[in-house]
Image (cartoon, rainbow, N blue to C red; front, top):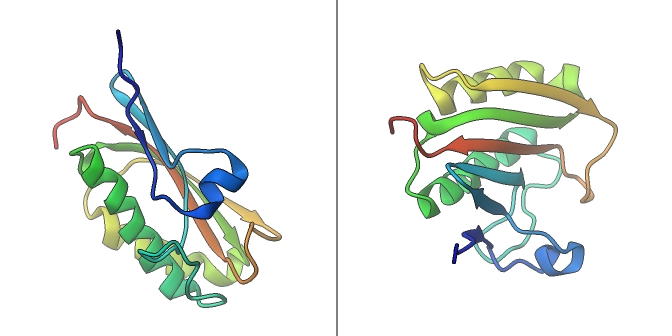
Length: 133
């Protein structure tokens, strides 16, 4: 029997919306949109794009750690940004800083709003655990 490897933070939104942060399917891990939650599951840095981006990347690392994966194993990402043009340069800088020389497939979408008041960024991604770490 196959065991399903599902990752949760234990934040209320997971129960309220009925989702997992990530689920492993074969060699791939599909990760729900990560955002600026702190360790207690509280949304932090409302309205502060740079701080939210930093915290979102830290949460991406938490998911990677759970699966014993690295940033080099992220094969694709989708970024959802409020005020895309205003935040484009900071997004590019943050992305280059997070990934270094690694280049996953990437889509950036400008949206009018995200789930939480003051939320400006959300990033979903896919990990291929068979790739070299």
